[in-house]
Image (cartoon, rainbow, N blue to C red; front, side):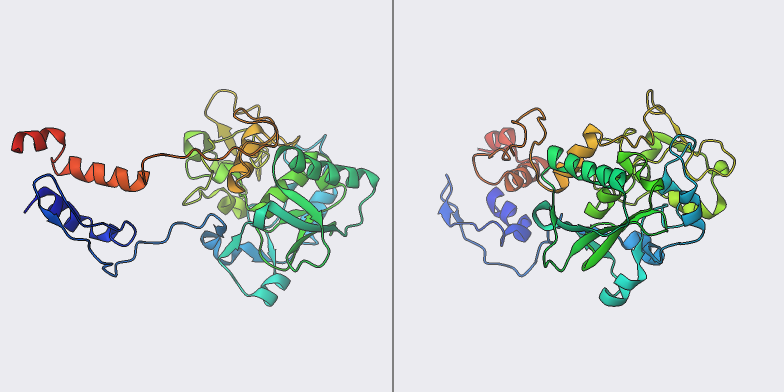
Amino acid sequence: MSRLTLLIILGLAWAQAVPLVSYDDIDDTEIIELPGNGIELPPAPNKDIIDLSAYAEAIYGSPDEEITAALVGNYSADNNNVNPEELGSYLEGDILVPRQITIKNGLTTQSSRWPKGVVPYEIRGNFNARDMATIQGAIAEYHKRTCIRFVPRSSESDYISIVSGNSGCWSSVGRVGGKQEVNLQSPGCLGKPGTAIHELMHALGFLHEQNRMERDQFVAIQYRNIQSSAVTNFEKAARTDAFGVPYDYGSVMHYSANAFSTNGQPTIVATQSGGASQMGQRNGFSKFDVDKLNGMYDCGYMGGSAGGAAGAPVPAPVVPGGNPIVDSFLSGLISGLGLGDGEQESSN
């Protein structure tokens, strides 16, 4: 059996994706094109889909107008050493798909990205001028540094409604379908601009930074200091979609050091230099937050990042010479079978 025939047999699964044309090789061995063999390769992961199955039904519930409302109502950004969204009784403090959505749409284990990064929205809460300035300032930061565009809702069926219910700070994750609320109880959730940015990040599809699968390389969770009812808030994700962006202590999506503490002692300790001073900031986006947003929504390079003008997407490089995935597969296969250039020369 010739080397090329062996390669073709071992590469049957690629026959449909990579048609082979009949030709004669250098020693006149006939190579016959193989038809599709009916074996389907698994579909490529869909970046538009956000998998929420790990949360099961814990993601669903009702706005808490008692305990959470009271805690956020008494919150002061100057006097508290945690963030207001870390006071909620919801999943991880501020993640909630309200029951009225699930009644209409049914339970789902997935949400999705907003098509082309366009998010129809309305502001329906009882917000004063200062609150409105904070919300509009958060939206302006998205427009300035990313390709996300919040547009006033007209007749769109899927949209965000920013409200001020007496139930704390919370949002769903990603586009869940229909009207979905982002709740910013005033004034507690609007003392710093980063909280509004944080909840809108959830609505766009992002989860908390300290729950990333690799977090144990960067933080040590102090379970003895965590409220017993909040231990599950610190579970690691089974898989992290971070779009190539490294762990970020300074992310607007990172908990503060004392989040859900039962005794005033830290629940999260940074294990790398400089981390402690950054955790839990709510002043605005970190650079890596912007990179993640632009990665998820295919924004290219935005906001003056290296590699392109401000706001100008940079196209992915074109790789000449055919399909690099197929080339890599065949190269590895040849090498693994000991049929590299040296082997061919010695056998001729």
